[in-house]
Image (cartoon, rainbow, N blue to C red; front, side, top):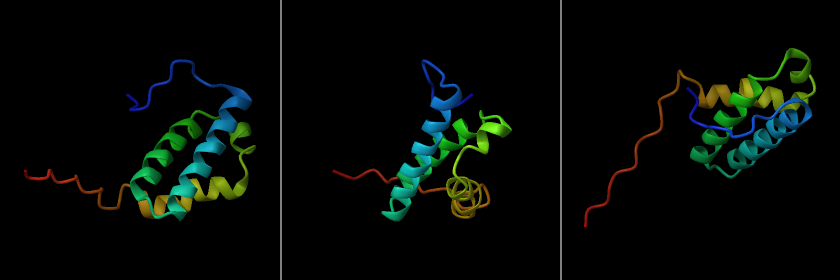
Length: 91
């Protein structure tokens, strides 16, 4: 079902750490105005975030959770126009 396959699924603290890392990477792409890369990292972070239990989600720093769930949803949510496909160059 998921686009992003994992050979060894992460669990516990390793999963929490990876979610934080991916959110930070997405935010750095966001700050650099690289929307395509930001969207890709955000999707990966959301897939991992949704695997966390409620107690594990609380271990994610609040500023990262807010960015992932609310601010980024405003710009990348399903209500937004999807990104355009790249046009093929003519030779």
